[in-house]
Length: 260
Length: 304
Image (tube, rainbow over all chains, first blue to last red; front, side):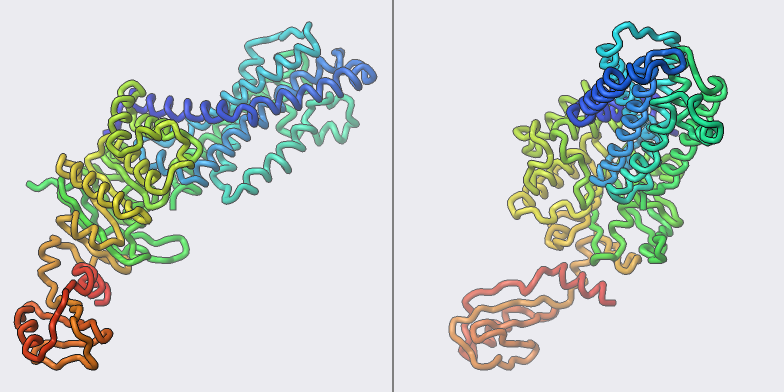
């Protein structure tokens, strides 16, 4: 016997709207910084240095950068939203509100992931709007693929943020992975350059960077060019989403990091 | 057939460090009861409550809430349970009204249905005027009220309160007692843990004492108090004494020159003590109980 599906949907909506309310309430910390930072990237690398660089894979440099910078914002924001929110409820013990309630584990996980996806996608849209100031003639080549990759990426990195938060025991633990793992991989994952400009050895090394697949699949959707196979990338993103979802549900079920 | 709000059998908890917090306890709380679960710090009370609320994973044993096993019918079991934890467990940055409304949502109650319930609950607990305040700005007493409002918003049939009046002033404690009596009279089964034994004596009909992970007493409050053999009295004297008088059948000790302390057994009468004191010219100005009756029993029980 279980509570009704309608009630579960209400619990899910309650958690999701709470998560959205949380990042909207602190919009100065969550929505404005990516717009400011990306504006600076567009000014410095796009308008000032970009013309000296010339074209990258047949596109103006600023145009080439736009998909990469949007992806960078989506990755960091969806990850940051879930890791800080879930660790926050653990730290404040308000996670007990959820664990004592009849909400199933999958609904708890989905609520946090939808919160992270909402912030990631919203920030992606904001950065895209900012990019139009610097490159008004930008046109999206494949809207369907662009939106698909946008959402899948936000889901994937929200899940990673969730797992990070489960294992985190201090605020240091929630900043280690974004600073020392995510940021270097993103910067070296083809946001600012095509791996075709690298020597053969470094090109092969770059192929092991998962960010390269995310950034290039998104670039395929927006510009129609990619350094990697799109079907391979989408398959890998989907497989990792499946693995991280299963792991998160297992951790919640076992109470690792959440129950004594 | 009797209905039980809570049935625990052979419940064990061994923490990862090897500490055995619960050594196979069994306990039944009847529907509609007001039950006190007492025990010294570290006895296993919070572990028991944590397991009932699924915040702590049990090692073995079964827990049933209104006949719903927490292993097999967990969501139904949880939907009839409300828990007021010992520590504050709400987001400090949210408004009072949002915290309680969100909590209702976690139990599948829509916003429109929750709205009048939240208003009524906040008014009943004196929080309505503070509904738009951030939780972190509330005083300790109001935070405790908020914890109770949160636990009751889905109208649980079983309410567990883990030291709800810790650090709360006397006036608010009395107000909370009245409130808890009222909801118990309206049919909610209540389990209370507290260090204020007077609180348990005032409110609860049945009592369990847990010590070193084992239930050492599980009986009615009346029965437990009946076991009290001796009561201590403190007598304030009109004139100072140099030494305690010697009277047959009574042990007397002088705490200071104007204060006499005695223990009177169930078989003796305090009147005979007064008349004996009168005979030797010792006049008593006033008298009071040496300490809380339940406290004496409690100490006796956990010493065994």
